[in-house]
Image (cartoon, rainbow, N blue to C red; front, side, top):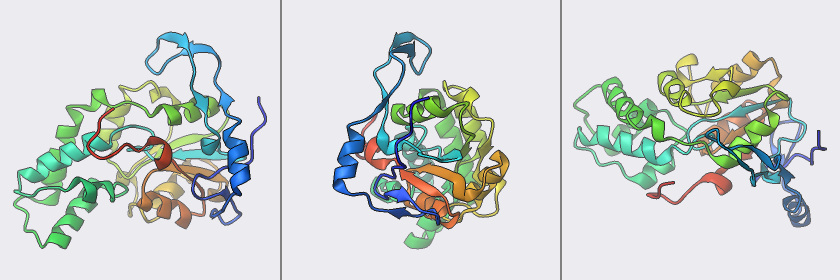
Length: 260
């Protein structure tokens, strides 16, 4: 097993005992960027073909001495932001509501129901259907394209590197049915025995409930968990749980309106 570099928290620095972060010196950032941990040169690609693997476990994504890894789903493990936007925009169009993608992109840590309620409240909107029906419509639209969703290769490198070495869990503000039906199409489907969703807790992100439940299920104290996240709400939730955080957005987020 190669030696682990010191914890690296992109945009947050190395973790502290409180689960927050101290900034890294620029020289240290440069040194760590120059030492990626390579995958084996021959192996399987994300969809099962035998290939030469040129991906690396980026130092920005190395969890250091974490005791468990907790991964947000949409936008972190999987490249689903565009598909989620299109699905919700379609469901809201039935209500005569136009969903601005910039507004959506800034709130991806919320569940679909929480997002619809917030949009209605901010816009003073009267919705024709109950929120639950709008969300069910959104979910069905999304699931029609679930087979097209792909894993972010940068995050798959983390999962592949630490599978069998550290407990790992999906900890998402999404719906269990949608996540499980999407996961069945993906090469990482057998690597997560623990999946916690918005359906499993009283409060969604930015409350810490999802992450705290995931930590409990994998049997690791919250202050020994590292969270991979791509939203402000998710980062706030991990901070409230006392966990270390790796913000993946600089490595995975694409400009609005683009597709993989």
